[in-house]
Image 1 (cartoon, rainbow, N blue to C red):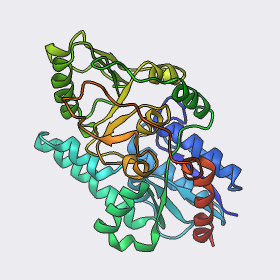
Image 2: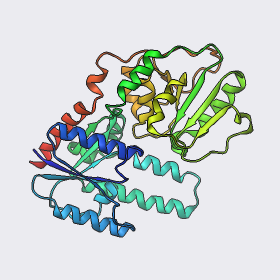
Image 3: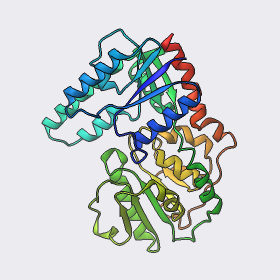
Length: 340
């Protein structure tokens, strides 16, 4: 059985999305029989050059039978040979860079272009590429066909300890009266999250139904909203993960407006909590749609419908597909093929 040396690009904290997933991923792989050593890549270093040196050292120190997992831009600088290197995607890097560069000054766009070249160079270097969901797998097969057999797919799931709480929220849920819907949107306030379309929808919807309201949670900053939304929209730049079940329980419908997305764990959590969610067809929405036929709906919602119809339970085989143990067991088989 191979061992995995996992380089986390953030703190391995459940308070950070990437860190939370890394913890779940590592724990599930261990349960499937894969030994995992989780390293916070930035620990003890302060500059990009020092980071590259640390990643190179960790790669050189790996033993036969180990596999190194690290982000593609870091893999770009690693020498050929040694233990296998895999990239586990957590977001569509090029789409995010394109969204960030739209309308930016030339100097910033050149910097983003240099980063994009590192990403593509890293794709060429890795021995295996874990695509996050079927949408990214299809995109990579279309735009980087030379990766071919190096591609594999993995999915996401909420933390196992959170799921019973989400199920209880769903069990207690009831539909809001017509014209009284409390909307919930969750995510960082960035361009690729579709914030422009979100604000436009809320302006139109809340003007039509004065009894409705909305919450923007986890924005990271306090966005400047149009005057028409002030007093109608609550902004929570941050919230504790322990508060998530209560936040989900106190709202009636979810919004997921991303134009580019890695997965969108908040979408999955809203659906498991029984919320009907109006979502763009990106990230997790592509894989979750068949499993939530009543709850997952196209964004934007119909503006003239005063009553938002409640969602429904997932398909019976949902848990068999979207659990960390199943996800990790599949990945463990794939890792064995890489380590020989």
